[in-house]
Length: 436
Image (cartoon, rainbow, N blue to C red; front, side, top):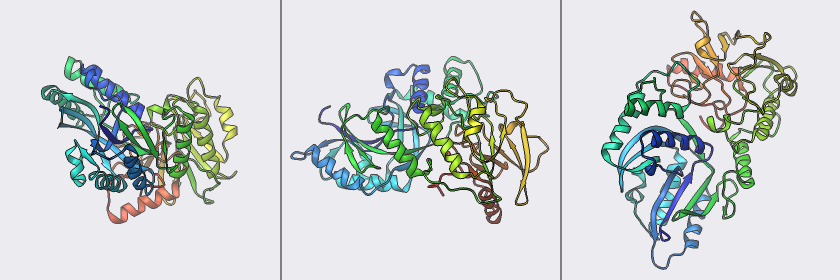
């Protein structure tokens, strides 16, 4: 294996979540030996270097290309099954961004004269199957059983218990299929991810990683709990607009919205793939409170739509109230402590449109005909609860969906009007500064 190399993007903020998903599938279906333990997106390889080609040449080649790219966004999508080089593969398909396609093609053109690739797609990058492997080296019959069960879920209704995550959905689904114990499955989710580093593997070890933000190779501590990784995450948050560093208050008369801050809640970081180191609630709270205050003056009207804080590391809500600027109104969520001062829902009007602000959209009054602005679902079911669901008149302002910065209701109204003019009913998945 020492002569085999692989160029890949390791998962960052979604890594722990995808590992749980893979472990749930592997454990329940008894295919643990086939589990992919280090989920990644392959860019080129596996490959061998041609005679006379050195590792440094390969790194120099990749580095010269990578220097022209910023962090690479992509989306983890539905499960797929294909036949690989060594048996069947169950994987999460990847929706590649244009920058991912360009990076892959440039690396393929540069490395093809220097290496002998074992991957047929490397010779035809325009036909590449972008994916993150969940399990491989499977017998076809086993893979087909698992994949059939996963496909069944796509037509199933969401469970009554909305607190299930993807991990519990996978486990319940496969238990139903393999052990015939039925519990309603949850639909697969879309997960946004961003490649922050390009990793070059040599056998089973990391040779080096190119940091797309620092524009340099890293060969030291590459763990995702290191201080160096925290520096990368901080640069990423600021680059993506997830961490504001200067005030940008809302226009007078506008209204700001956000839900599900979950301040002090350590488990929310892996559960919702937040761009922070595991367990680092101090940094998370600092960033989320800082973003809120950067958008608010003393008179800015802002609504927090449930689940302000949670968990043993959280401060009392009253302490957070004192840290948050603006003319704030807090609506109760399922994780908030009982408080008669928190309304279950609120009706407002803005720019001629009617809105109901409620944490869980299922709790909105049935006879309400306007738009429901909610949280609760985070980024756990973007197929059913995207940022703007035109068809069902729902708007999801969970922190993860709106880029961790309070959203402008005037901007939302403008998007709704634009969609009405063009007749477009396609959902707007997320409200990130770098996503149109």
